[in-house]
Image: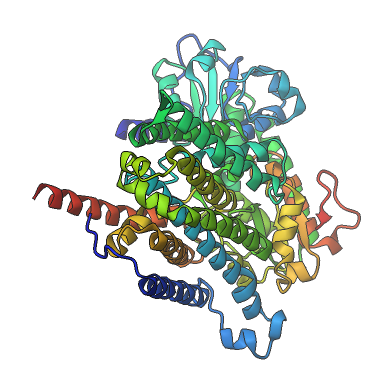
Amino acid sequence: MSVRAPYLTPGRLTATTAALALLLLASIVGAVLVGPVPASLWRALGQGGTSSADYTILFRTRLPRVLLGAVVGGSLGAAGAALQALLRNPLACPHLLGISGGAAVAGVLALLAGADALSPLVPFAAFLGAIGAIVIVTLGARADGRTTPHAILLVGVVFNALAAAALMLVNTLSSYLQAQGVLFWIMGSLSTQSYTLVAAAAAYAVAGLAWLLRHALDLNLLAAGEEGALQLGVDVERARRAVFVAASLLVGAAVSMSGMIGFVGLIVPHLLRLLLGPDHRLLLPASFLGGGAFLIWADTLARTMLGPAELPVGVVTALTGGPFFLYLLHRDLRRALG
Amino acid sequence: MRRALAVLLLAGCSASSPGPGSSGPPARVVSLAPSITEIVYALGEGGRLVGVCAQCDHPPEVARIPRVGGYLTPSVEVVLATRPDLVIAVPSPGNREAVRALERVGVRMLVVHDRTLADLWTSIARVADALGVPGAGERLVGYVAGRLDAVRTRVAGLAPRRVLVVVGHNPLIAVGGDNLQDELVTLAGGVNVAADAGATWPTLSLELVVARAPEVIVDAAMGSEATGEALFQALPNVPAVRAGRVVRLAGDTLLRAGPRVPDAAAALAAAIHPEAFQPAPTGITPRAG
């Protein structure tokens, strides 16, 4: 992995974060102007006012969806960056570790138990599921009071397979129409018209990101190696617990509001680490902003490509992110061997 | 693979050769789809059913009959354990191997389709033939078609309204073109605004709902009423929302290509043209949402 800038100056932190924030803002504006149905911003803000079809299309259907994409993509990106550092493994991501799966299973169970799809019980259950997944995975990977990154990754992969099987089980047992509800969690969707939902997602995201940023320096040391971090005075277990809880918060909220959307938490932090270097004071906010922009454009493709029907956004993130990630891996491998 | 296709095609054209020891009309019948079970009962032959699929839930008497696995995932050995002399299935990728396996061991199979109204007429005739009651089949087709005609007559002359039929809220999944539900919307005096969306069950953007401006939204999605209400109330300039014409219908009646399609058609017609239905038809009572 190339490390370009060893020192993070306050100027560079501000400049890079500001540039990425501008990119995200431009993505939000750009994506709101693109859709399967032509809509004019001019007409929406002009004559018809808030009762015009243009206004409804742009501000009641597209903007909330684009904003939810920004928040969910950001949450997954930041959580991915933190998990990759914590596990010292660029392949770590909320998906592979089973956090998304645990959240989805708990969310589906809450729905089956009769919780209304709109009630706050569902995201709360998903959050508990994410935490539960993390607890099970870390406890399962612990031996003699210690956990190694590889063990966590292995147990996570197994847990993820379990969660996938549980979702399939629910899918098989439920009727066709209920299965539609399960499908949402498996395929993922950012479709929403509710600013309340977006605001709730944003609140979770800000809390999770702030929590992670408090541990940015610990993450830098942990990423360099657990022994070294211990010697430099990091309370490794405590830092790890804090990061896991913060990541669960981010992933649980994201999954509960948009289902399982893969590859954002894997590819965005990985790519940004290559571009910006491994300092988490920059990498965490950068992954948040970059993840948001990436998911917004992936969803824009999902909304428009097949028009008037739409694609599951998870298909777009996997089909665009997957090959690119394979290329990066292959290049790294060639460098390491060459 | 090619053989499987050939088998399915053959089975689709006619009941394949009777198995050993099966002469005369079958007495032990297994139905692998809810629509088939309803047809067998409507023919008055429900007593011959010795096995049905897990999703078969109508008429209520069906609760007594043993289950032989899911609609899409029948269990070959449970089917065989009922010692059937006729198994009736609707083809799907999920049950293709099971249908093949049953055929290979010599069970008499009948494969019928259930996607369009034309499929329904053919299914009724073919099931009735296989059960040895072709007369009952003709009467049932006449009865169901007659009830459908009654619905058609009731809305005849009324200006068709633009209709969106929703079967899932999140993601928003609608009735597309080229299926029974689309036909029923047309029959009930509606124009399906998602008929050209390129799929039988397309996922739609909310903005498409705004752009297509349906005058009636039929909400056949599972899940709570509140979810659908919150979803559509946020789109006040959709004519259906403005006029309070968001109507909930029980999903399974609408989705099943069985002898109850006239109930679904009547419920749709009452939702689309409430003025032609005072008082509301029996069966499902639509409620404005």
